[in-house]
View 1: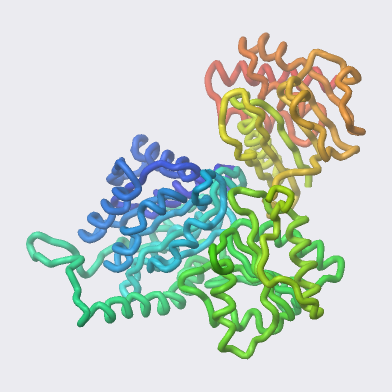
View 2: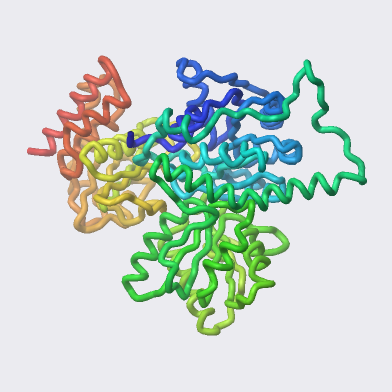
Length: 392
Length: 179
């Protein structure tokens, strides 16, 4: 059934349909409405789960580590400073190969203190071993939730997954959404039955000390599982399409990419605005297209090499920066192209930090700069697109 | 696509009003989107909320800079916010005031609709909460959403006696501006 609903409530409903055994979370803007609504669903008797109210995000994720090793399907949600406080447990949970699912309501990291949207928080956790999926709209954030469990709990993968959705822009928007049907989710997502669990009747050790003779092999197996997850992410999207009829691409998606001279690469909710811009610029004869990143970790290097091969210039726009270098998606993409034969200019644009609105004017400006680079006019290959120089 | 910007003060229900427009437009069989301007929520501080209505799915997510309609819930905002900023000349601005439109000195070519929503709200709700009254005025003066759809949207947010009072507030304002 489609209805106009707040993004956070739609995601909470999707989580409910995944039948989590344990939810543990600490409220933080702009994630609050998700866990608030889950708590309400538990209080209303609609969701049968162990809902843990804890003292911090560190405790939220730590308690899920304990629940997951005994075989529980687990869920949490956080953002920004809350995700930062989870840092140690992010690495522990992925290293322990626990298939947790967590919605990150993307928000800036302080200082300066800022509650608004950008993607610095989850992008900063890109090396923590979690799979990271980025949603374009509320429907995709909803649909990614069972997909995330499917990928995470695959016996060949066993890695935690973050479903990243832009804070406020997607968590607080009201728009028409197809709510998931319980019977369809049940047929898509089987119960979680891990082969190895913590069991007092059959004692095992989880999280044991590993010395230099074996540590590299553990890390390698984790790395290898992320690489193998690429195919699983594609499969999870296709399986979802068979049951629900909705599809957003696998690792990436493209829009007007066929003959695009200027290719925009990005992830998250700004894609909607970019699609509208592409339609109007196409009508003016500008050959611009979009490549959307759905999976940032694992990084879809091969899919990108294929999707970008005919472009004359690539414009990467993202809501983060790597202080001391360039931005994260940009440098990842350039690394993926370096040992390929592709040698078009790749320009990077940081925008939308701390909730600054990314407008149609910003997108057009980016395309104009990229168009000049295509024609051989050298400009800075990395810039803050919406910088107010008068404030510096 | 029609774009609507709400101006209010924290606690006046501007965000809820935008959400109800989105729900009502969907009831009418159209696509819709509503979102707040994400301010730091403080009672009394100037706030904005946005709504879009279209015949096709809505993809754009930037804020609204050139609205077709502006709804101003509190006339004292005119002293601190350029409420008519970017308003299309073909559009309408609906203002809660007991003054005449010409007395407001608004810098716009758009039609100015003045309605004493505070008075209607006091008479129907007994409280100066004007968001539903202003929705009745929006519905009556623009015709962008059907009255019965607005009433349905209201019932998703209110129930019982409070819902009945708000339905009366909507109806009163709707009839006032539809004359």
